[in-house]
Length: 365
Ligand SMILES: Nc1ncnc2c1ncn2[C@@H]1O[C@H](COP(=O)(O)OP(=O)(O)OP(=O)(O)O)[C@@H](O)[C@H]1O
Image 1 (cartoon, rainbow, N blue to C red):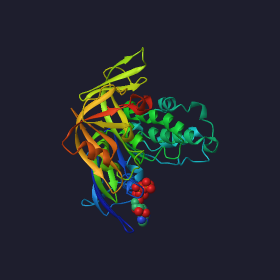
Image 2 (image 1 turned 90 degrees about the vertical axis):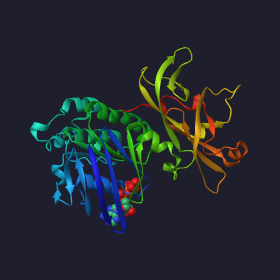
Image 3 (image 1 turned 135 degrees about the vertical axis):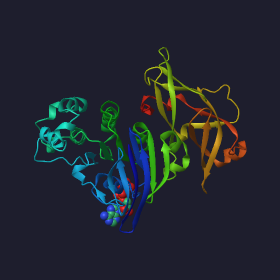
């Protein structure tokens, strides 16, 4: 459990934020310069707040009112940055063991072997960092942080320097840290898809303030949270339960109160909740249930809000029947002609080809 309410002035920038999380992964999301790394530095103890407190499991890491400041090395917090920051003169094995140095013997919950096995770095142990690829370095950095048996892991854009293939390799490893090692994680990113895949809760920062906070579904279901994103990158996330897999057609059926969602390929075991990323440009709106269309996924809902600017396009947030939201991109002209406005019932159509295994992740439990 982390709870933070802090203020810090850095030059002309003023950070003034508060958030809390019960466990699992909480994401700090926001544009460049919004204060994400500054927040990480305060939690890690690399900087001191001007005022406020940060509590981890009820104990203060810092509390300016009580004069408490636990130094960084005594906080038992693991750090993983964009660049792995390994010690160049130490082998992989000794880089890993360096992490253990920080864990008092009685608190060494995490052993070397399972970490090496989980991260798939057994064959690298004798190498020095200079002879590792970017993805391999990052695995070792994650391993080093894990082996310190941290009470909390801070990950600041850990995948930002990697290509998309490496990202896809490392994302499941971070999911395993979350699910198997059960380490609470504060995860900084401005990649919507990473945040959606890993985090249960999101805090959106802008200009040093919290502008939105809540579940991934709620925060990204509100088109305002992605106001800076191009229309091609906007996405919303729908949580639905795997109902079955159609072997004959190779499709997964996901059950949601608003309707059945079809996805190409396999999503997960029946009964498990999945989170599906739906790009706003792949959603079509209709005022009547369509007939004679190839689209298989038809979800019922009500228009929650419409965001427009001076341009020709609008972002429409549809509140789905049951729970969750889906955001659709549409032209202002179409909305006008169809008379679509907040409060109107609507059908959200999603092409099955827009959804496949790449767009779905098992929802954090
Ligand atoms: N030591 C400092 N002195 C003065 N200004 C600082 C200092 N550290 C950070 N800032 C400023 O604080 C603001 C927030 O920076 P921060 O690194 O937290 O942003 P960020 O959200 O992590 O951005 P990015 O995604 O680009 O890493 C920026 O305007 C930055 O220039």
